[in-house]
Amino acid sequence: MQIVGPEKVLITGGHEVGGVASFAEGLAQGFVALGIPSEIIPPSGILSHWHDLRDPKVLKILSTTAVYAAPFVRRAICMAHGIPRMNRRGGLRMLGILATWKLANVCSGTQLVSVSMYTAVHLEALFNLRSDGIILNPVKPVFLEAPEEPEQERRYITFAGRLDPCKNLHRLLPAVRDLLDGNSGLRVCIVGEGSEKAALMNAVEGDSRFEFRGYVDDLELRMWLRRTKVFVSGNETEGLGIAYLEALSQGCVVVMPASGGGLEVALEEIGNSVHLFPLSFDRTEVLSVLRRSLASHCDPIPMTAYSAAEVAKAYLRVDARFSLSGKFVEYKAELADRGLA
Image 1 (cartoon, rainbow, N blue to C red):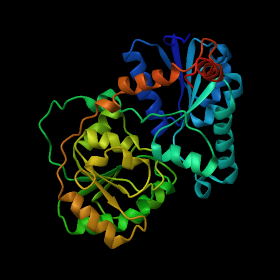
Image 2 (image 1 turned 180 degrees about the vertical axis):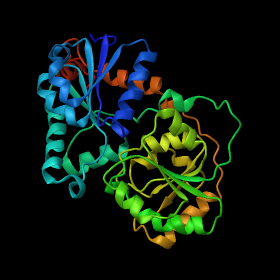
Image 3 (image 1 turned 180 degrees about the horizontal axis):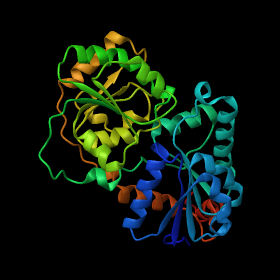
């Protein structure tokens, strides 16, 4: 017999801003929309919720940095948000992340869920890690609201996210500047903070066409996206990309590398509202792709499958595999006994 539904959902976030934090906030909103109380806590505070960790009536959704608690939990879904990069994060950190995912595979109270098929395939092929489910990231409800104002002129090339080296924005800037030089009236909006911000600002010093906006709230980000013609990102190992979904929901054309889980966001839109540039980041080729994207038109694509409530339902379907005691292995044994496994 299975638990019908959790009495509460505990979700660990990531940084105070960024992809994992946005994931946690959107998912929490989805559970609340389904009438299930949810709470977001930092990964560092997970052990202070010992009673919830052991309570099989509470569903835990653990981000990568909180999966170290896997041996102690019952009824937990552990997240693989992307592939760890040794060249950016260091070998020890990568090994630590892989070790936590291995815990999620072998501990009886946990399942491992990947945010894209891209992530799941690489975890299995490279590290022999099993994904118990694949669930794409949610889009917060604020990005699914119909515009109240008339459509504004779209004259921005926009990037939004952490300004880290792995985003490769520095490799895209030369081609972006070439695009601006050939199209008067275009501007660039860079939303976010990070270790690369100073270097990026130095690279465009004196060019008033570039605007750095720092971190903004969801409403302000939505405003900028509604002024954006082309949204760009350069992370070739992106696990999925909530920013891609947010941009498409606001009618932006998205330009991304020809790799990563972001390709799964809207496969049918590639060549229309989604354009791919080569992994070489060749300046001439990237510029060619940017020009094509600038000539494209994008109506907001349907986002029902990515709504917070629908994604929360997908987590509940994975959660339904747990037994009453909050164990996944026991439930698999029950299926085997009944000839269903």
